[in-house]
Each structure stands twice: as structure tokens, then as C-alpha cells.
Amino acid sequence: MTRRLLVAFLAALSLAGCGVPGTAGGFDAYGATPGGTQDIALARTKIAQGRVPAPEDFVAEGLYSEHDLPLEGSDCDQVLCLRTAVGIAPAIDTGRQELFVQVGFSSNVDPATFHRKPLDVALVIDHSGSMTGASIEAVKDAARKLVEKLDENDTFSLVIFDDDVDTLVKQTRAGDHTALLKAIDKIQADGSTCIECGLREGFKQLATRPVEDSRARRLFLFTDAMPNVGATGEGEFMDLLRSNSEQGRDMTLFGVNEVFGQEFVTKVSAVRGANAFYLSSPERTSQVFDEDFDFLVTPIAYDLHMALTPAEGFRVEAVYGVPGVDPGASSATLDVATVFLSRRRGAIVARLTGTGEVQPGQPVVADGFSFQPAAGEAPPTVSLTARYEGSEPLSSTSTWYSQRTVRKAVALTNFILGARKACDQWQKGENAAAREVADRTAALLHSEAEALNDDPLRTEAELASKLAALMVP
Image (cartoon, rainbow, N blue to C red; front, side):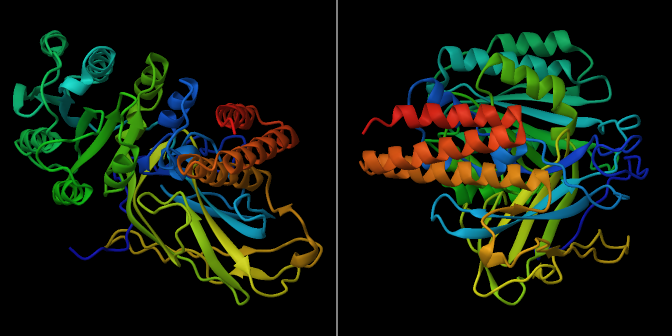
């Protein structure tokens, strides 16, 4: 199906106007984040266990989604608004001075009136042998929390799989929590892992429900994401997820177990309507279901297209935070399959390299980013521009930020760059080089956290220090 450049607005949401971040009476208390991986909890878990993560465990969109990155700008008057800010700073992987453009996401959804849509839920649980012990118990605890979030307006089915599939509860009204919880309690771990089997049966259950604009349909998959029978390639899963998304059946993946396949999940969760979370602890599970559940089931935009046109004298070096796009990939177009409502203001960061002198006031992105609303709604295309507003020519400026938040976004980007490079070198046996990069990354984060007096950034600085300490030359 041809990809359409659209933003699908939810008719059920209240669309009152919003103010800029932090303004009294504004509704920017709600933000928006791209879909895909929503955390770097797997990397955090491995470091806490004294293990060096794989480079792919550091997912840019996951790290950005864990932080609130609001940008100042004009009032937000629709369900999805984009703003931009510019930062100039050295990139930790090359040491070169680069220009970073942050695209910020916000929403005018009113917290006083927002309610998620009624849900048709298919709960699909991996009970294969790799889930034995603490993993299956953690999944059952999370499944119980999910059930408690449902009410009589929702429907529910329960599917379990190992190398085969079993439907414990066919799609039914979710009012009787007792019966659902008893079915969850009986699950035991055994067998191989046929994720495809579970997905197909779960989507089959959802397909028994009529398609209604007033309802949402979502499959929740709990797994360690290590398929070993049935379909095992990411392309096969993406085709399966895409075909169901086209029919209005989306997926959220919850990962458990330290053998979790992050690279696989990063790819499949970039599909339209999908997102993914790693449940690293009971506290993390409680946060996801108690604080974020209504948001993670509420897409506010699909098939968002942003055309990045660098001004003369610049080229696109890399983009970060686009689900399904490897950090560092150079692209002049940024396609985001889904944007979800969120408690936090999310971000995408584009990295530009200058090829000539840039003067104060000169645009660095011509025509900026654009998206088109859903067919038939007909608001004009929204264009954003980014401009260098420093007082000195770009080449004589070591660091400069148009807003405070873009400085934090650049620091987080450098964390991803440094951590991935250090972990890659570590895997190759280049221990001394890995430790040097990890130390520089930690030092930069500590410096930026103090300069911004930002506690969440201090937490990341401590994580970077712990990673460096694991890399003994």
C-alpha cells in the first residue's frame, strides 16, 4: 500500500488550544513521542548486572522517550504540534563541531478531558522454556496489572504460546476480572518460542471484533523476543504486523529477560501503530501500567513525513530518534509511522555538517519540516524553519544553543553516540579505546548535567560512569 503523508487526528480527543511549555493555563502538560522502542531499560539492566551492553541496546528514540524535552514556540492549537531548536556543539564520536536540530513534539490535548478509547485487547504471552522462573512470574504480574486497567467497555482475549499456541480465553467482555486473573495464574513455562504462532492467533481473536472508529484494537505481546521456531526474521514479522495494522490492529511489545533481542524489537516496533517497552523491574512495570497505559494505547498521528532540506552550506550527517532508522543514518526525509500521546515531550534530532561559513541569522534548514493532516481535513501543510541566531560566525563558536532543552537533547545524543561506539570497540576487543570513549562520554554528561542542573541528566551521567567502570583495559 502506498505510504500516505498524513496525520490522523482522533475525533474523541478534546482539541482546546495550548500554550508554550510551562505557561499557566496551557495544555502542554501532555506531549507526544514517536512510536517504536520507548526506553533503554535493557542497557540499564545489563550495566546494573555488571555486563557491557551490546551497541544496539542504546536506542536513541528509547532514550529520548524517557526524558521530557519541551521546546518553546508558538501556541499549539492542534492535536500534534512540531517545534524546532538549534544547538552547535562537538559530536563525541568525531570531535567535530556539528549543528544539531531538535524537532520537538507537543500536543494540545486537554488533561482535564482526555480519556482513552475503549479497547479490544488480545493478550499474547510467551511461556516458552526461556521464560522459566522469574521471567514468567514477571510477565504474569504485568498481565495482571494490564487486566486491572480494563473495564466493562473493553474486551479481552488471552493467548499463550511456546512452539504451539493455546487460546485460554476467547475474545470476551473484560468485566469479569476474576476469571481472567485465574487464567493468567495457570500459565507455566515450557517449550520453544514460536512468536509468529502467538501473533497470528492473537490477531485472529481481535479480528472477531467489528471495526469501529470509537474503539481501539491492540495486541499486547509479552516475550523475551528470541523466536527459534516458525518465522524468525524481522522482515516476516514486519509484514505480519503491517498487514494487521492496515486493518486497525496494532501491537505493543513488552520485553522481559536479559536475553531480550533488542535489535529485533527495535525493528519490528517501528511498524505503524507499534511501540515497545522493556519491563526491567516491578517498579518499571508499575510505572508503565499505572502512569503510561492510557498514553501507550493512544496514537495521535500516523505516517508523519518530515522533509529536511538543509540550507546552502550544509549537508545532513545523521538523524537520531526515528524508529526503525539506525542512529547515524543520513537521510533528507524523516518518516515516523506513529506518534503517541505522552506525559513527555519527545524529540527527533538531525545532525548537520557545515561546508562553509554561516553568519548570525542565517537559516540552516530551508523550508524545514512538513506534514499533512488526514485526507479530507485539509489544514495547510505546516512548515518549520531552523536558524542560527548566535552573535558570532558559526566557525568561531565552540558551543551555542537556541534553547536550554536542545542542550540537553544534544547531551543525550552524545550519550548514545559515545555508548554505542564504546560498546562496539569493547566487543571488538579494543578495550583501551573503548574505555577512553566511555570516560569522555561520562565526563561530558556530568559536565552538562551540572551546567543545566538537571537531575535526570545526572542519572544518565552516573549510568555512563558505571559503563566506563566495566571497561577495564
